[in-house]
Image (cartoon, rainbow, N blue to C red; front, side):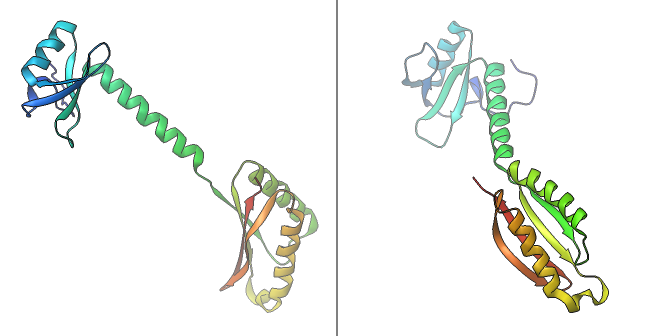
Amino acid sequence: MYKKKVSHNINESIKQSQIRIVGEGVESKICTVNEAIKLANDLGVDVVEINSNVSPVICKLIRYDKFLYEEKRKLKETKKKNREQQIEVKEIRLTPSTDTHDLNFKLKHSINFLTDGDKVKVVMKFAGREIVHKEKGEKLMLEFALKLEEHGIVEALPKLEGKRMFMILRPKK
């Protein structure tokens, strides 16, 4: 009946002798595959194996193309929900010599990220001998966090790794 590659067992390709049939307008019952196929032909639908991990196997009386459409739609919906739940981490880069105007500009971006529900990773990069004044960088990062206090919460305090210092802020709920 179907020329395309079929990913589910349908009609005659169901190997079990006893199956449980379900479907719209059909009483749920246990019967043989031949009885189910006969009933499906009368209704103009197919017998589609839904769950083969139980005994007896559960099969649904439905048009196979409609069944594939519903499966694809459910998969698309779950992917959409997963995508909505994902939180991105946006990165803001600073240096110990970042000026107030630049800092305010980066603050605005951070506020936008936090209101969108994303986390903000603030990275202080020390170039050359700036690492000698790491307190200056840490102070700047803490001021940055203090200015974002009404929009986000500090998840991880400034931490030095090599010549970079990291701090992570998460949005307030």
